[in-house]
Amino acid sequence: MEAHICNASKEPITNNTGSTIFPCPKCGHKFIVRSTHAREIAAAYKCPNCKFVGPN
Ligand SMILES: [Zn+2]
Image 1 (cartoon, protein in one colour):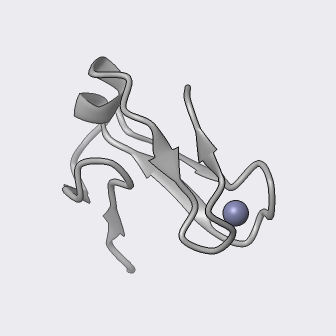
Image 2 (cartoon, rainbow, N blue to C red):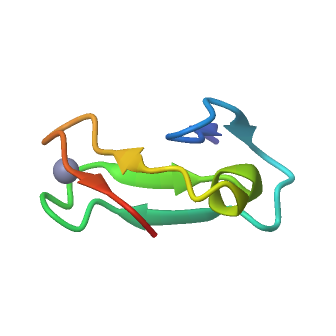
């Protein structure tokens, strides 16, 4: 199984129940992965495919 890396903190998402994974709202080609930590600090995410940057 492929490990997901948090888009903001670069931490691997494994046993992180608070993490969220969703497809890029713009291009839909890349999955945005946000860890609990990234959500807590409201870190922005950036799509590596289309460079879309979004908040929560
Ligand atoms: Zn995208």
